[in-house]
Length: 84
Image (cartoon, rainbow, N blue to C red; front, side, top):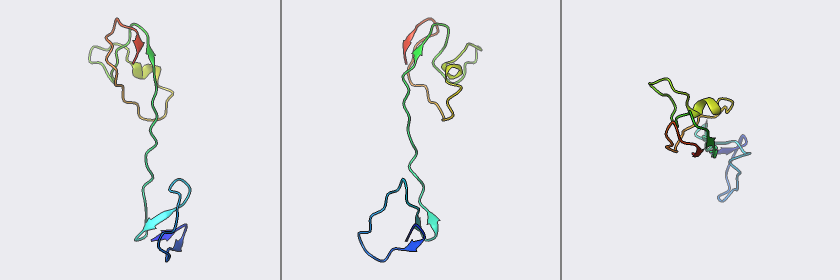
């Protein structure tokens, strides 16, 4: 194992996975995915889904500036409004 390019020889060596480069057998450990949660007030006329076969607007259109992958979880129908 290496920590920031140096072989670790002392048991109990501390590392910060957010700032340090930790490698096992030459391969870097994958960083934990950062999770973001958004509370959206859905207006009427949108459906809470990624895509709609009927062509109605979805909440994804309201989140299009968000660069991360968005997973809608609330289930408000087309005519409802509120938090989802």
